[in-house]
Picture 1 (spheres, one colour):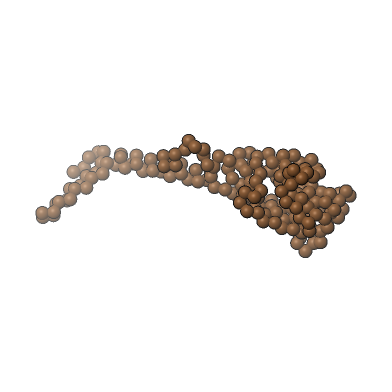
Picture 2 (cartoon, rainbow, N blue to C red):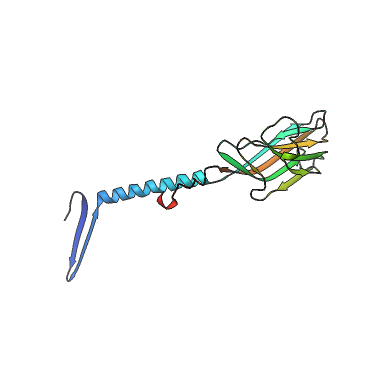
Length: 181
């Protein structure tokens, strides 16, 4: 027996009878709903997935012997968790005079932001430092700045960082029911 809205079949073999039926419209709607649900979940996963970000910036030291290197700021709507910073010459084998301070500051003024914004120091260059989860956090509009003092004028210094960038709204607030997505 066949119907326009669905498919039904009856099978009889001796004393054994089997009846199978499916409403194609219902199946189509259920598959569409499942695909929409999967698409929403995938979108949330992409929205909430952190991104590894690496940046290196170089600068030539002026006659003053102090150089300020701005390693950047999180994009609007994101925050950074700093994982590593390397400061030194163009290569790890390059002798680099001076000391360095690492700062988190809302302003980049071409000079040291001061101790109140200092997050780490390097007494010897080149220097590499690794940080744990949320040891150094940058919010929107804050800059990660390396200030090198006592550097050799005319020499190129490099500061590089690895951060994980998180979406500020990745947790999606208190109003989202994960089971009801």
